[in-house]
Image 1 (spheres, rainbow, N blue to C red):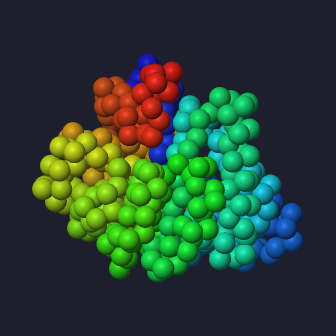
Image 2: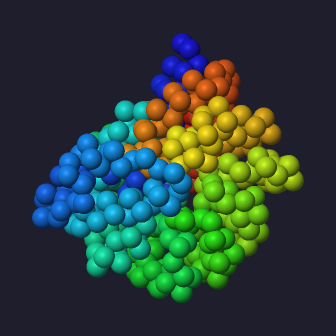
Length: 326
Ligand code: HPA
Ligand code: ZN
């Protein structure tokens, strides 16, 4: 078996996945028709042609626009099920999935509708395919902390059904410190915390996510490679990074895959995991990320074994649950 075959075939977890970012153009048009909505694109090809991003913001503008087709519980169920079906084809057995309630509640979709639909999809995948999932409720950092506090208030009746909290959307100009009080409240609820940091933002944002927000893992974190002291700390404290290689290239964080900091992060002994972020928009699911990384770096089998073991090590499942897969 080649190292690539090993990487593709072994059971794995995905820890950085925005469910709204798994909305394929085909499903977007299907849901638009079902809900009587007109997307501002003539057809699937025209929408796909718009996937030409120059930075995070240019992607987010399209990502939020497409989310408008998600209206009913069935829509969220179908979205979740489509992602999990595709994830299963990549031998993903466990997924920790982010959702952005504010993207939906701002359009008048009740929090309960979003959550119930996502849970229905996850439940079907559990029953049919034995897949395990956790939901991470993510706050949109371009909004104010007060707005996020109100969203947290809205989530409280459903708090047992939310596993963890996260922070995403436009990073530059919205440092983690902006959400110190919000994350203190989330921590007091006894939930694990994650935050996007060091995707477009500087290493200082990663320090803030650790020191001020007290996150258990960093989403992206690829700019950590610019700061030796930060690398040393991430290694010492065994803070996982959920790296999304195709996303970083598509959003021009790196000019091409060969420039990616992944090998440097691995060389420092960091707990790096590979993930697809927004697979419908960035050229593929986890398997496509693995192929692209292997083409650029030609990792050996031991490196792939480490990366795949890291995906479980960095997850929020217990040792006992993990033992089933390892
Ligand atoms: N970064 C920040 N926010 C996001 C992303 C991302 O990669 N994907 C969806 N929301
Ligand atoms: Zn992300």
